Structure formats: structure tokens, C-alpha cells
Amino acid sequence: MAVESKLVHADASGKMESVTTSTAPHSTISTAVDSTANAHTSEPALRIGSLSLQSPVVLAPMAGVTNVAFRTLCREQERERIGSVAGLYVCEMVTARALVERNPKTLHMTTFAPDEDPRSLQLYTTDPEYTYKAAKMIVDENLADHIDMNFGCPVPKVTRKGGGSALPYKRRLFANIVAAAVKATEGTDIPVTVKMRVGIDDEHKTHLDAGRIAAEEGAAAVALHGRTAAQRYSGHARWDEIARLVEHIDGRVPVLGNGDIFKATDARAMMEQTGCDGVVVGRGCLGRPWLFPELSAELRGLPAPAQPTFGEVARIILRHAELLAQHDGESKACRDLRKHMTWYLRGFPAGGDLRRSLARVDSLDQLRAELDEVWDSPALAEDADGARGRQGSPGKVLLPEGWLEDPEDATVPDGAEIMHSGG
Image 1 (cartoon, rainbow, N blue to C red):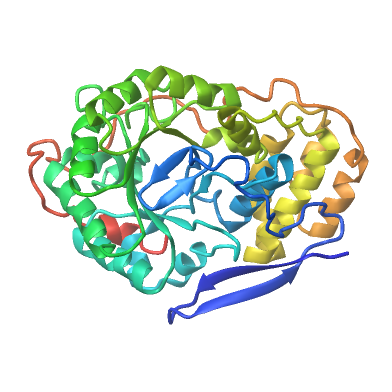
Image 2: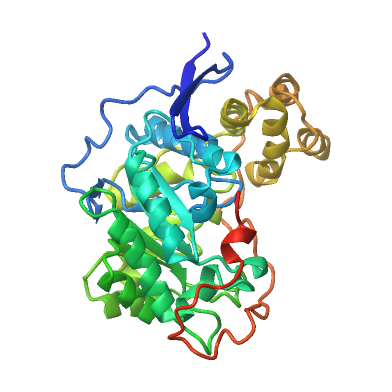
């Protein structure tokens, strides 16, 4: 029997629309809200402003990954495997200016499932004016329940314009941006949080000042990826820098740690070693949406859910494809799914022919046919807990000319918002 579900998004006029679609009968996962959600404990594990979370686990926003389809899949996995949805799942980053200008692509990216609660949206911003307008739009049009701001992106095309992990070096500008978002949400239950890195490089660390400034300007929490922009995703995250930030913030706001959490015990180790209040998980969940119930169970003292078999993962892959098709249409969904295949198949006995055929799938019917041979496979993944996703090598951070000359300069970097309009 097919299962109906709806996705909700704002159109260019600001009107909220619902799109009803039907999933294939092969899918075994229901989208219905479980009445037992958050029933395991009455005391929240993490409070971020008005938000009370039963699990101190946050899905990191990842461009091209954490759309409504992937977030729904992760939440379904958590509900199915441990009986509740307890963490926070953040939408992929959208640009403040593009949101204000009602760029159709950006509005589409802000789609949330009707049962998604709380709705968490991350803004990329470099300009206090557009930050205020975007946050006020989110408030006035009820677009989200939580606003996170990205000051951690290390990608050269971002930092060379003064955005992402380059921006906290400009202390006054950073303060003005955080203050603008907080001002726009005054009188509401929408908390504003900040995600950042240790700094530009080892000679220009910014996390201690940025954490203090964010708390002073009214941010409800700060999240730190334990790498500099120069490290990108190479080497190991420096959990000791997360511990330094926890000590520096001294309980004024929650501190969340991010970096190198690839299995449930990694999350517990980070929290024990750093004293952080919660964890933000990015690359570790690529091809493993079932990591969230494992993390939640580990940190909440619940029984660990069983590892999925290859046959169960095949059904999860199909469910992911169905959800993507609801969001973007079947053709784009199948193209988008291809990048997930290597992550999903890691550690499983998938031969070269199957891997190649799955990498060329262009319809849901073809995907079902290709997965048919592993539908009942009881195989478990081997070595699935290692690092996955981007790694690469460290490199010089590209910055605007003269960027390091005056950290108190509050001038908005030229062209940074325009470059990302629509993304």
C-alpha cells in the first residue's frame, strides 16, 4: 500500500504550499508521527533557547545533502529504530540575501516536512542589513523555529570574499551580524545560534573571541568545528580547542562540538573529553542516516539499535530516492542520489557490476530492479565506522586583499552576498 506524505515550502509570494506525493509500496518506513516521541525521558538533554531536545545531537547542514529528503530519512530512521525523534536536523545553508530576494531556488531549499519540529534553517551571511531582513522574514512568515548562521565554511570561493570561516576575524562585523539576527527575533521563541571553526589558520585563531562575542550579542548556543579553515577536512579535529571554548564560555551558552564523529562512541568521547553540551554530526552520517538513532541511544542510555543488513540498506536507498523525487522530481532525484551510492555501499559486499549500475540509475523503476538482487541480503557492513566524505589536504586560505590588516574593521566585504545569491 502506498504511503502519502507532504512537503511544505514557501513560494515566491511567501504563501506556504503543500505538495502531496505517494511513495512506492516497496518502502517499509512510515512517515507518520510516533506518539511515543521523546517519551523516554522528561528532562531535556540539551536546551537551545526555547528549544528542548531529548538528544544532544545535531545534524550539521551540508550543501546538497541535508535537504528535506535526507532530513526526513534521518528522522524516520531515528523513529523506527529507537521510537522517537529526539535531535535537531538542520536544513542546508541558504544565503540571506537570496532569501530576502525570494530567489525561487533558495525558497525551494527551505522546504520542511509537515511533521518536522523544530524546523531549523542555516543562513550564510556577511551583511548585518541582509541578516536582519532575512531573520525578520523567517519570523514574519513563520519559515523556521531556529536560525543558525554559518561562519565555518572553509571553501576558497567563500573565504576569498570574506565569508564563512574568514568572517569572525573581523570582530566588529561579526558582532554586528549576530546582533542583527538576534534583534530580528526579539519577542519570539526563535533562537539564533552560530557555527564556526577554530580560525583561519594556526596564526589567526578566532574561536574564543567569536564565542564570547556571539554570547554577548544574544546567541543561544555556539558550535565549533575543531579545525581551522586551512585544515579544511584534513587530519584530525582538535577536540582540545573545543574544550578551550567550553572553558572560555564558562556556561554562558551551550557549546556544541563538531569534527570526527563517525560512530556513536565518538560522540560520547567528545562530550567527556571536552565538556561540550552536545555534538554536531556531518560527514559521519553520509550514507548512514541510521547513525542518528545510534548516537541518540548512546547518549541517552538506551539499548543500541541493530546494525542494518544490506537488504535493509537497499530499502533505505530506495526510500531516499522516493523522498528526493517528491522534492525535486524523479530525474533530478536519481542524479542526486548517485553521489550517495558510494557512501551507502561502503563495507557491503556489492560487486563492481552493481556499483556501476547503481551509479547510472536514471529512474525509480531502474533503481528497484538493480537493488532486487540484494533485497534479502543479511550481510552486515565491514569497517563502516571510519572517516567518510571529504578529507583532502590542508591549504592556504584565500582571503580578500588586506583582510588581516584590521580585525576591528566592520566594513561589509564586497560581493560576498551577491556571489551566493540563489544558493
